[in-house]
Length: 112
Image (spheres, rainbow, N blue to C red):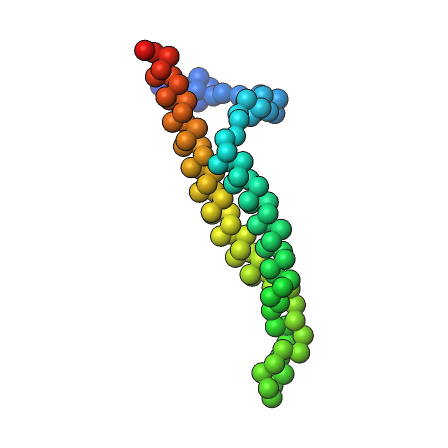
């Protein structure tokens, strides 16, 4: 068997943007997923605020080990964004699992 013939037989077209949009419009979010999205937006803004509230030392003096200039704490902001992303992803996944289980339950009830 020719490998190129098999590729032609198995080849599918890429989905169009309208098809993807139509499939995503049928998806409804449950409470856990909505809370995860809202909390992530809040944590995104709060990460920027934390980076400004706890500035990093830009330069220090040699005699007293004090900061002479401070700058935005980018590493704290990114760290907070990463942790909040993981927590919100966990809640979003939990909501998705609950959504799948409820759809399975509905399908099983229809069969009876």
